Image 1: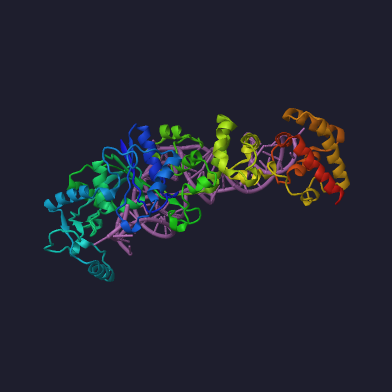
Image 2: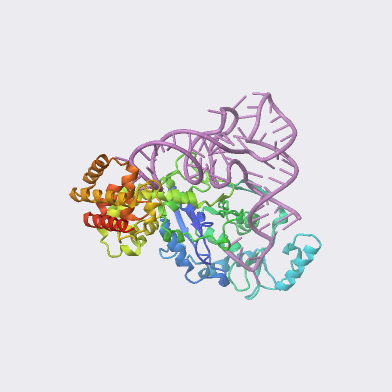
Length: 479
RNA sequence: GGCCUCUUAGUAUAACGGUUAGUACAACGGGUUUUCAUCCCGUCAACGCGGGUUCGACUCCCGCAGAGGUCACCA
C-alpha cells in the first residue's frame, strides 16, 4: 500500500484539511506501506514562500513522518510538481499521438462568451461542444486539452460506496496550462501512477471530478487506484466546510495555545471516524492498529474545540502520570508566566507536579501559576466578599491567620506534616475547613483557585508562606 | 440552475430489521475536609418529513425538504 498527502504550498495546513494527511498516514503505517509527501506547486500565482516548510512543520509536529518526499527523497524524486514538467509533457505527447489531446486555440475571453451563451439559454457549458475542428499543433503558450470520451461511468469509493455519473459531467479538461505547467487534474494522475500510489485519499470536493479522472486513466492506459473521499470538517458555527476564509486556524496555531500533538492527532483522527468501541483516548500506535478506511463517516463533522480541550486535559494528565513530571516538564518550558523566568527548573517542576491536573492547555500555566513566582497583590475584597469569610470581622480573621502562622511556623515543612498541622489547627480553632482553609489559601495566593492547601504551602516554602500570611495580617489590622 | 453527496440529542458518534435508541464532550445537580480542577454518581437531551416493503424499520425502497460539494488555464 502506498498513500500520499499532496498539498499545494499556498499557506498553512488548517484543521479542515489535515485529515487528508492523518488518514493516509495511519493506514499506510498499519499496512506496513509507504506514505508519500508530494508538493503540488503547479499554480505559480498562488504559491506562498515558506509554505512548504509550514507543511513539513505541521506533519513533524503531529508525528506524521513521510517515507518519500521533500528532504528524505525517494525513488520518484523530485516530489515537487514544478520540477516534474518533463514527465507530464512526455505523458501528454502520448495522448496527442493517440489522438486523445489537442491544442486549444480558443482565447479565455471567447470561452467566456460561450459560457455566457450557455447560461443564457439554460444549458450547461461543456467545452467539448465547442471543440475546434482543426486544432493547431500544440506548442508552448497554448493550453492542451483532453479529448474526452463521454459515457456512463461507475466506480467505487471506499467511503461513499458505489457511485456513477453520466456523460454530461465529462468534458475536455485542460491537461497543460498555457504556462506549460500541468493542471492538478492531469498532474496528480500522472504522479500517483509514477509514484505507485495505490490509495488516493482526499477531500470530497474532488468527487464530482472523478468521472473525468476515470476517462483520463482509461486514455492513459493506467489502472485506477482505490479512491477514498473524506467528508469535510465544518466550522464550529456555520454549515460550510472549514476554510481559511472563515478563520480556520492553522494546526500548529494550536501548538502555541498549549495543545499537545498527541491530543490533536487523537481528536482529529476521531472526528468522523471511530472503531466501533467506546474508547476516547488513543495513542498514535493505537490509532495505527485500529484505523480503517471503511469506518470513516460519510457526513461532514463539526470541529468542536471544547472536546479538543477536554482531550488535551486528559492527555496532559496521562503523560505526566505515565512519564513523571521531570520527563514531561520540557514540553511546558515556553508556557510559564514571565515571573517564572528567575525560578529554577526544579522549582517549576514542583509547581507543575501539583498543578498539572488542573490544566486544559499548557498555556493555562501562564494564568494559573503566577503566585508561585511572585507575591500576589493583596486584594482584601477577595476575603471580605468570600461566602465563607464574610461573616467574620477583620480582626477575627487576622487573629485566625496569626494563630495559623504561629502553628505553621512550628511545623515540619513537608506535605504530610503540613496536612497534620492543618488538621490539628482545625480541631483547636473549632473552625470549619471552608473557613480556615479559605482564609489561608487566599492569603497565600489571592487567586480564584489553587492546588490543595498543604501542597501549595509545601511548594511555596516556609519563609515565603509565613511572610505572605504576615503581610495579610497587617493589612487586615489596618483595614 | 445542472450534476453529485449527506441527514441519530447543542457537538462527535454507536446501532449492520426486533435495544427502555448506547457512549463521550457540553449543560445542569450531587459527592470526595477550602477554592478551581481531577475523580465518582445522577439529570436533561436525538432517529429531518411523508409514503411504502415487513409480523416488526433508525436500519431496506420511493418521494419531499434541508444542508453541503462541484460546474476554473485553483487545487
